Image (tube, rainbow, N blue to C red; front, side, top):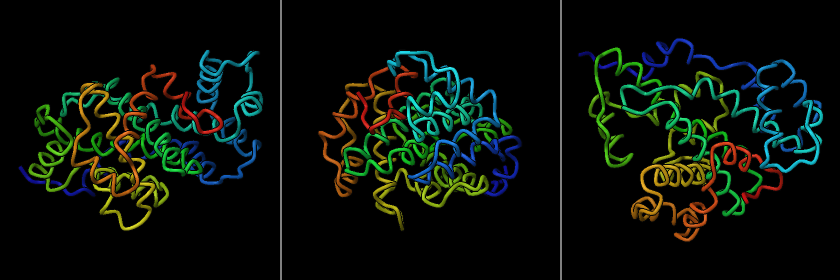
Amino acid sequence: MTRPTISDLVTATGELATVPSTVIALLDVLKDTTTSADRVRVVLERDPAMTANILKLANSAYYGVRRTIGSVRDALVMLGNRAVATLAFATGMAPVLRRDLEGYGEDRDAFWRHGLVAGAAAARAADLAGRSQWRTQCFTAGLVHDVGMLVIDRWLVGEGQHLPRLPDETALRQAERELLGFDHAETGAALAEAWGFPEPLVTALRYHHTPLAAPSDRAFVAAVAAGDLVASVLAACPQRPWPAVTVAELAGLGYRAEDFDQLRLDLAGDLDETLAAAARPGGVLV
């Protein structure tokens, strides 16, 4: 068996090699803290399917709106520009991220839920760190942080390889490295670069398991790492203790053990509630 390079895997990803142009445009919108409602509306109206999903979410009971939201313009007025753009980014990435990982033994719903919870937890972690201005960027990075696994999975399936269920992500990354010479964090960063994602987001993908090693945007990466930690623990056993090594590393970046306990409580809802909470105006999960 010949080991592929990261470039080989990214090049061979087929439809994963590109994302909808609407998603890329939304990333530009989310980078701009003063983006206008008209700018968001113009982007969304290019994609009727995305618009339909936004309206479905906007009318969910979680938002508690008092009248039906029937258009993008209504959603922007009722929920705010950045909330709508965040919801749109998530719905736009769903077809990319909601896939079975046969080589990892993980089904599509579990993988999607992990990204969604990690994104919402990362957004809330930004709040707890006093960085609420980053919450939408943290959500988008958390949502896609494990996208490298999709790339590696295609190679695993093609080669008839399978990574067994492992006790934690440290063991998983070690198994990936033994097999390939690199892990899903490096692979995801390479794919994000190919997609044209902003550099801070690429950095977050590359270092979400090792935030202290990030050469820049370390506080941003730490929020994403915190989100990943919370999502992993909630998926495995909601009441299990926090991994001491990871908590110690994040403590060096400003997070306390009680912050993770708060995140555990905040992320107890279902998927629609989790997504709505991450985009809720005012930066608060309730």
